[in-house]
Length: 101
Length: 162
Image (cartoon, rainbow over all chains, first blue to last red; front, side):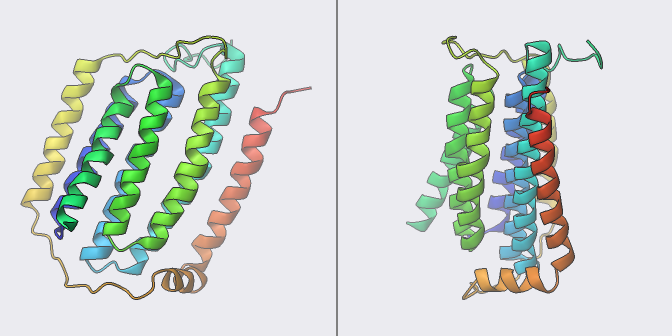
């Protein structure tokens, strides 16, 4: 529990799972879920280096900014996905490869 | 005891994250994502980041997850019971991701990390507030502008044209 590498390994596995979701999922919302997992793994790294390394409170501030960016990204991405659904009647990202209908 | 709790939290986090990426039902994925976020919150508490843990619960569980569930509901017909979604290229994806995970794991093992003997800070919220208002004032303001832009952009994008 009190070792940096434990947290780094948890972060690596979470990142790998998120990347797997982004690669294999074809539903736009599910791809977004994978991105959220990746952002969470990055945040674990920041806070682990703040706890064990010399980053101290700056790591906490950086994690806060990552959360802000994740919120903005989720809002805009879902607006785009709903727009795609209204225009193409699907959110399979493989079917949405044309710039115009 | 703390050690045991830590591994329980890690198990919840990673097990739910696995459910998120492999579940056939999109709604199950969303609920598994909820438990994964809560597990990550527990990890933040272990890392002495109490303020960030509360922000994680409020923003991720209370905000982003609700948005995602709204997204699922708005992009599927309400009457369709089966909200499923297929995964493609599972084997190729698994091989690529496993290879990358092994590389990253090897990097974690082989790097001689320097760990300092930090002591638990008496207060985190006050220190974060002080840093935000002094050292990181410009990024703080830029983040507020970004949130404003995202707010306006999201409403403009999802609004019906008339």
